[in-house]
Image (cartoon, rainbow, N blue to C red; front, top):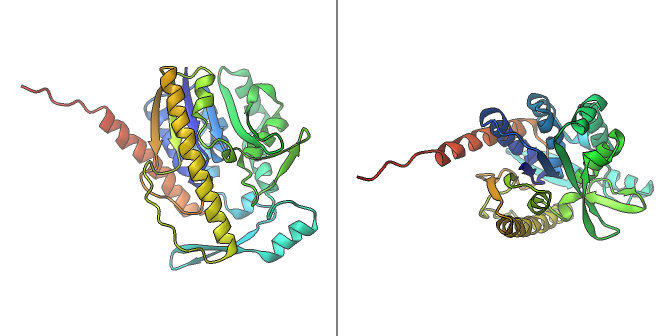
Amino acid sequence: MRALVISGGGSKGAFAGGVAQYLMQELGHRYELFLGTSTGSLLISHLALEKIQKIKSVYTSVNQESIFSNCPFHIEKKYGVHNISINHWNVLKNFYRGGKTFGESHNLLKLIKESITPEEFKTLKDGPMEIIVTVSNLSLNQVEYKSINDYSYDEFCEWIWISCNYAPFMSLVRKNGCEYADGGLGNMVPIEEAVKRGATDIDVIVLQTEVSHLNRMPSKNPFSLLTTIFEFILDRIEHQNIRIGKLVANHHDAIINFYYTPTVLTTNSLIFDKEKMTAWWESGYNYAKYKNVELNQIEPELD
């Protein structure tokens, strides 16, 4: 069984879209299992439908308003660099309304339902492929994997949304008596789950460099410090997930093909910039192309 696994990574998901486009359109990879976390969960349904241009158009056009119904921060671009700071009014407004997070992301749920129609959902559910999104159950302290085969249209759209809810900056969702948040809080790169479900050949897109090249600038305010801390924690989770995934795959004789970002795309994946995300999509496509050209090069025979 061939599987495509896409990690979490916020706006960096545009890079994953480009990689997947090359793998599917140029190499002709056909996947029976699609498994995504956070931003990866937004991509996999459209990829399974092979509607790549549609998701590219949607994905590279999103901005803060597309995602946040109440945005908890200000973004200021100065000298080509994005600076992020807290939006005190919006945060206080959210707390006054009884919210448990700094911001709310209900606009993202609307966007998901606008981009995936009930007819497309039925096509996927009736088809041979399995689509799975990763969520974190904070109440039970465990990671859960939600398959399209087990839910209705509205329910599955909600699970995709929950998988992307980067708490405490986005919505915390109470469902079935439990509180749920971003799947990346538990499993950023669900390789292990793909192997457990029978995958033997796995293409894994990791929205991070293989070797750390990051030297963050000093935090300018409490909000930027908080985002830095969360990015650090998620990076550690990601490295652990990959290490465990490799061990499990080796034990089951599964083949893993990794696609890391060749450079650091951004130090804050909550900033959605159309120009940059369009460039990252093309970068992902070209990276997958050049990597596979190198892999398929035939070494000259020795005399």
